[in-house]
Amino acid sequence: KCEIARTQTDYLGHQISNGEIRPSSYNISGLLNTKVPQTPDEACKFVKAAEYYRKFIPNFSQIAEPLRKFVPTTRTQQKKGQKTMITLTQDEINAFDQLKHNLTTDLVLRLPNIRFPFKVQTDASDEGIGAVLLQIYPDGD
Image (cartoon, rainbow, N blue to C red):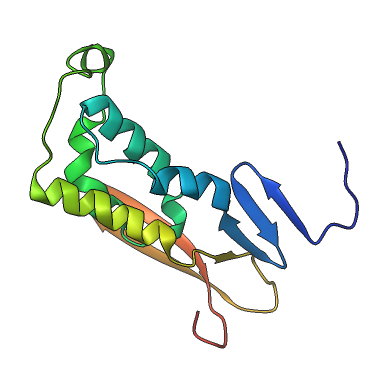
């Protein structure tokens, strides 16, 4: 399908309009209605779904860290114990609640604007390197 001269469109779980990108409210409502996980599989599904919007959540990896242990990294881990009942620790419940809270805030990313300068911010440690391309706006955002 083709739609011409649209000022807003939904695409891959994102709402794009007027130089801004936001998470789709439909997708976010599904995450917000998630109950506290009772199995490793439920916890994994929540983390993976929230991770899709990580670019909108500052410090996502630090917030989600207590829940990462429920995300299997091998096929053996995937099959093993995903249906057993779990009780989340207070740190894990706090991480779950914090992610849900952050998803309810006004999450907006701006599209690049060539009239404003760009900045490359880098970081490195013994375990890896990373870089982010930022744009500096006059209003400080």
